[in-house]
Structures are given as C-alpha cells and as structure tokens.
Image 1 (cartoon, rainbow, N blue to C red):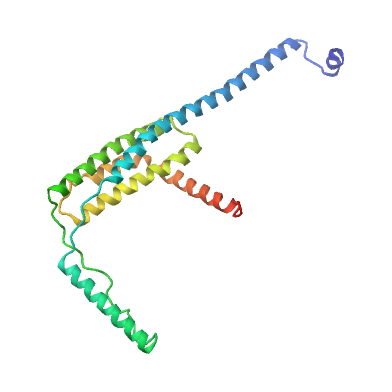
Image 2: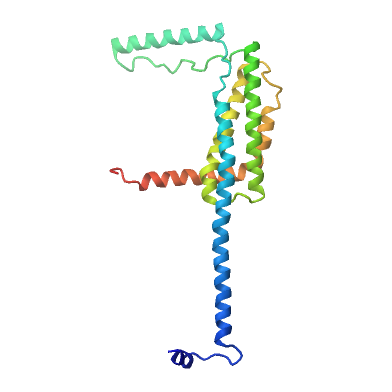
Length: 230
C-alpha cells in the first residue's frame, strides 16, 4: 500500500515522507494549542466576569432597596388636581346625558404646576447619603469591569451580550433616581454626582450601545423563533 501511494505522489527529492509527517505533526500541535487556548481563555473570561458581576448585582440590589424620601404635594398642586377632577366629572356627566361630541376636553391644561423643591429633613438627608454611598460602591465595581473591557480581559461576545445590559440597567436606575432628587429637593447632594456617574459611564458607552442592541436583537429572535405550543 505504501508503495502504491509513493508511486502515485511525486515528491521533490529534498522532501521525505518523514519531513511531511513532521510538518503535519507541527501543524496539528499548533491547532490543538490554538483551540485549547481559546477554550481556556473563554473559561477564564467567564470566571472573571461571573465573579465581578456577582458583586455588581449584589450592590445593585442594595442601591435599589434604599427608599428615597418623597416630596410633599404643595397646596398649588392639590388645587390643580382637584380642579381637573371636577372638570373631568362635569365632562363625564354631559357625555352620559347628551352623548359624545357635545364638548371637547382639549381646552384642559394637563400640565401640573412645577412643584417647589422641598428641604430634606434629617431622615431624608440620611437616606440620600446612604443611597449615594451605595452608588459609589456600585460604580467602583462597574469601573473595574470597564477597565477589563478596555484591556481586552473580557471580550467574548456572548459573555458581553449577557452582562452588559445588566450594567446598563444599573446606570439607568442610578441616573433616574439622581435626577429625581435634583428635581424635587433643594440641594439634596453636592451636585457632582451625575457628573461622576457619567465619567464612569463614558468609557463604557461603545460597549453599552453595541451589546444592549445585540441583546435586544437576540431577545427578539428568541421570541419570534420560539414555538408558541411548547
């Protein structure tokens, strides 16, 4: 059999079968190393991302559990809502008696007055300080995740599709609550908090934009391709 193969294939005199076998072995070893390295590399990324995200999610839950103070409704707001309720009742009565189309509610002003900002009491101040302290702890962990992204320690697409939307959700929640405090309370914090949050968020923005969209696309495909009967 070896003689048949040798006669069927013409080799250059300077290359022997043993040389070809050695080259094949070298290529095979390189491929084994490459695929083995990729599996090991992915396993390391999963381990790093999982450990870090466990801390991020634990601190996210802590931030979400802190109850922030609620603003008191001003007399101006109360009067506005009472007047609107009265007007709606009048319209409902006319519609019931005469049918629709007799009058329009388009004249109603549905924009409530801008409430005056409240001053926080001692308990409110304590809760706000507790909230921001928890935010800083969370942002520290997110900043480390961002650093690992930038140095390519975490770069596997499936890992990022799974975790980045959770980080994005944490950013959105903190920003929404900080804006709430700014809107309803007189100087609840020092005023640099949103700037600090955006400073941590900015380096991550390319990943946040890309993998949030990839996650939405994947979720849409999972929904559209799933079997409703299953």
